[in-house]
Length: 168
Image (cartoon, rainbow, N blue to C red; front, side, top):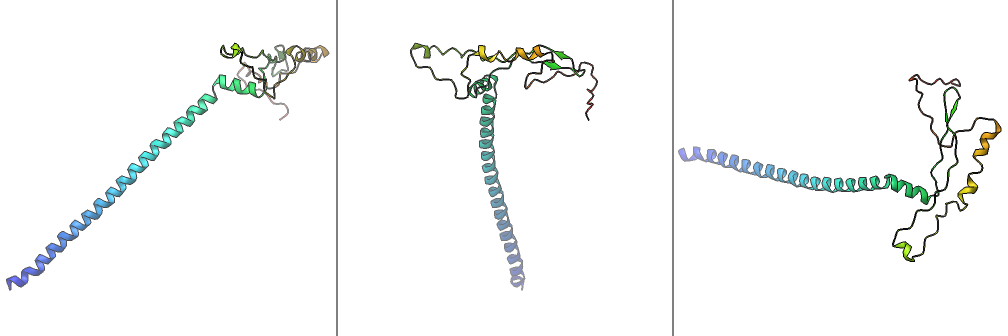
């Protein structure tokens, strides 16, 4: 009887050991799968971070003052003249001047050695600067206060008090 009593116990121990080994194998497989997923996500994060930094460098390069000025000239824009500011009491400060078309930038030394110069951008005005200035100074001669230059932003009030808005 001792042999018959041992068999169920040995089978129970073998089943428990086999079950434990199988559960460890499944747990190890799940951990490895998670590790592979984590590695893949880290690589993807690194590549996306590199791409984001490259895009940020492009944005920084295109928003640099010299790049903005070059792009504005390509579009035919010119630097504005002196602005005029209107105070909260209606007082005009400053004298308006017309925007002048600056002379074209001097060509680089390599281009000055006989290479053909490029034509001005298609949107650039082709009239000389002296003819464009004649309209602005005559505006103040009518007795009316001169208007602010387009796009001019008035300075903030110096008193620190909010500016009243009578129309609102």
